[in-house]
Length: 568
View: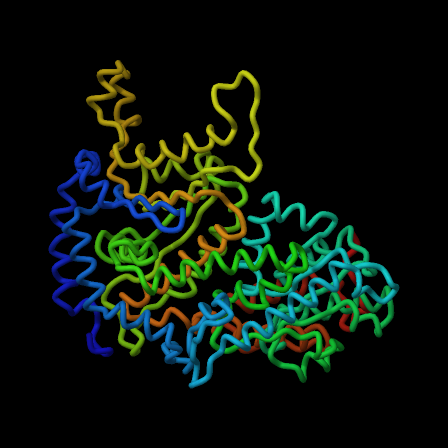
């Protein structure tokens, strides 16, 4: 496919469009009668089982999707990413998060240079530093061991590491290695988030990790200055060098801030924020909490999927299959949303992270060449762990809008519970729902079935489930650091596959810039109104009215307030 050609202009796209009519006539309860079809729609790799037999698709559909992938040059685009070509064309950058978890002896080029040695140089530095802090050979300004870590970042510098941290907290190996330690994440500029993060912490035992590539991100740096004040007001300004470190590339601003540049951990322009969990952004705070050996297993899990994506044929390639069916559901069947439903409470922060990876990557309206798309791209992602979600939004999924679902299950619980006399264990009860829900969505319940059950006629319509609602099931063997790395990489690559098919740039995010630039104007106005009593000007009637109300109602805020930290 020529780069300037829209994928929707290809014969392969048009064939799939024509094929939709055939699929609409077919119900999943009929498709699932075909055992051979279901068997062909199950794929296993490295302990992970993917079952996509509950997609609204025949084997003919799958074949047509593979032809679409060929038309979109999917294999070549994956290779171009791994070869370090500047596939992020709007920012003229490579896209090499796969290099962050590559084996030490791997060769991955960017601009003619193997980047893997530099990656491992930073990983070795993280290992050395985290071991110093954890062993107590690096102590705070008063000689006390640093047991608590607050990581300051936003977006990709926050959501991914928080997901991994939450998932590891209840893993036995990780829990044992983190005993007596705390890791918290400060992201929101809202002072309430500051208050929650420092409540119960002692500055003497706290290490702050400031994550900002440029060291200029407005929200992150205001939060960093706030915690710098919290530390220096308790321990003196000189304590900052012992209690604050940075993940940044701007060593000049790091030093100006008061952090020793030797305690700055690098990452690179070829790492997008939402793909940066495996860089120092995530690895540093997670290693401080759990120890580098645990986090290295996480990196190896992600690396196993990286190798799988590049080497496995599409018929057995888990992220490719998932990406193709997302394109099928969004652009052909017209389902704009997707529910991510992990049947493990440890994965409660997985959906929020994938929201960003997916929606910031593929929330685009033009092709990579700037041509407006005549079709829908991107997915609206949301989710909640089962069985919580079942008592929340599953009503809509079963009897309202059709929303394709990702069911994620785990064979062995991190924390098994058995009660004598119970029919099943707690984990079996959870997994009973994991296995039942996809079938309930697929088969539904007909009026005829309800009549046979003697349901009163006036309730039949209310109790009817139309079924024919697509889902995939992903079954993990367990949920240790390695499996968590696998799961992360599966979804990262799935998002990239979708973008490659749609021929959009999944690696820039210009959409976040406009609101931020307008916020700068508001910030200047608030300062001028507070300090110089200047009239509000340059805004529309609505914004002017809201700002007026805000300033009037908060007139008790002094124009030049003294430093005040949270009171909790």
